[in-house]
Image 1 (cartoon, rainbow over the protein chains, first blue to last red):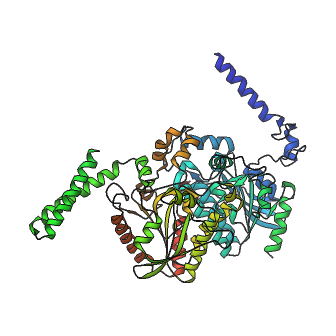
Image 2: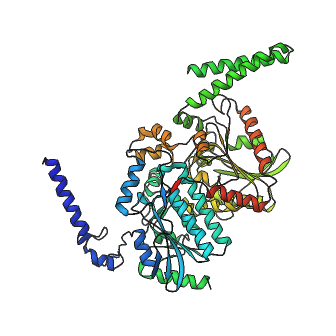
Image 3: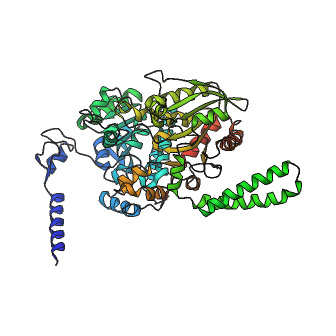
Length: 278
Length: 314
């Protein structure tokens, strides 16, 4: 065994340990947290309230009391329409993300009950290529919308995305128009659309369906905006104000309806459904 | 470059022949037809050999006609409308009523500005939320009076700034997409220069999407993509190639409906010819859709965008 192999092995073992394991460091207050406790606490740091990211499935579990299905459209899978390659091939990036998350792409369309009310939930997964929106995200989102129109049940989206997926270039951009049109269809059919923005909701996702909710709810401290903070900083050549593009900042600027933490999210959504859908 | 020279030569010869024919030398017509055929063939070859990065340079050329030039030369009686009725007037987007070949229409487009002072005033064609909200307002006026809408796309992208974010850049763009997606009057969009991401698409949800031969349209600038994915600014030409941003690429991907030919070497070399070519294309396009009833029009437009994207279904 060469030295490099030896180091790799150690690294691998360490990684495994962290995964099985037991402890994770809070990114904000740096406290070591026992993973089981963290999950029980809805992935919120019990010490400082820092909100860890959730996977799409965890989102569905958080919001639904009874899950009918985690994904109504599992057969829709990505292709590599442009045969795109940067430092890595797009095909390989897809494969890696699939292995990492167990998902076909960055969104699942679940349905089930919140207490006694059936809903459709489009939940994004940031771990799948930064939650970027390409053809599959657009297609599944639109199918989810059509399903909720057909069944006359509320539609809820949970955004977690860096924006449009560059590897599908212009086709990704067009998903913005596609999903915006789907929301127009919800409106015309009188279906409630609640948009939940989580960390992060940026770019092409922010500037399409995410900001078209009848009601827009954000999770505490989530980064939400069109342009990324670094791009803005480079453009205007000055430091950004404290808390810029965070959920609380957007609330103050009148861009969203409310900031709601995970513990109260389901209840809030349920009450809104009762207020709007009879 | 040799090809370029040959084409320029041919173009001169054709001009000469034309003048002689005009003066009465009708026998030369056959020769003219031959030369034109050859010209067409070579131009086509040239069009195919230009790299995506070449086209980026042409699309951003400092002398390339802008929205304001097309308005002046294709439309008459333009009345510009200002302001979003909420915060301000964004000069990066021009909007108003005009006349197109005797028909009342609405025109909306990004404007980059020509000289330094104007460029700064117009923020280099990078809109703030107010620009999109003004566009939405004018689109709704167009709907109210059943006027067709012509949009002209030419922007590096929506402006990345503090004020833009505070006042809801995302919301403004998203709303524009939704309003265009359901507007009960014909919309024709033309990408005339740079189609930069969401800021471009916000004027691009149309029944027909035209694109000038050397225009580009992309989810991110080649420079931005190079920095993020290739981790190197020098990779911009490669990124441009791989992102498939040219008119030909976009036609193949089903994102645009038609490529509008530019004068040889680009619109900036013969702007008058460009105005004629685009005017003709707009006239023909309008004819295809102006008589469709609003319900059908909206349904067709929504279906058009619903069908965009490529994926597999197992």
